[in-house]
Length: 168
Image (cartoon, rainbow, N blue to C red; front, side, top):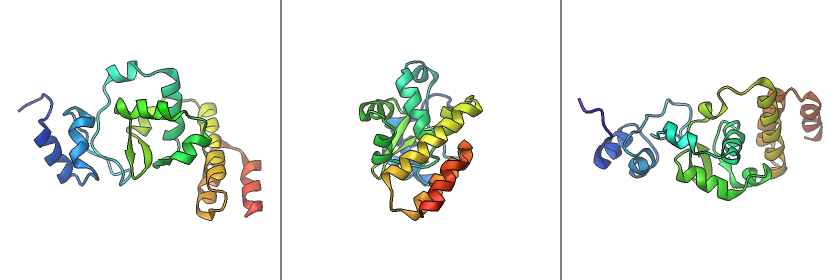
């Protein structure tokens, strides 16, 4: 039984067996310590975020990661811009293995971990920001208006929820 990191070949083989979308990138991202996706999203793939990396994360990176994690899905670059997140921060998160790119969108590697320990007030604020970002990026999309309403619901902002419904 080997407890050390997997070889590149073993990482790729494990990722393929798990049905990950980009198995060839697994070893680079996980440094040989992949975690198999738990089925939350078809965009997930093996990844590892060591505590050393988290300790080196700046406050801006942490806030950006949380803002993207609350979406619960891959985040479009337009939504990231609407959140006011500098794309350089996103690049740093990707470089550190805390997020990755999938089909031109950004996916936080561990969204549950990014949101863990946040109070209700902060979660409400994040959901409200997500709703606003969705609506400003996709003003003509009924499906995404429904998603924005879900975020407004979770934020407790029923007045904004009513406004979105009245506008559609």
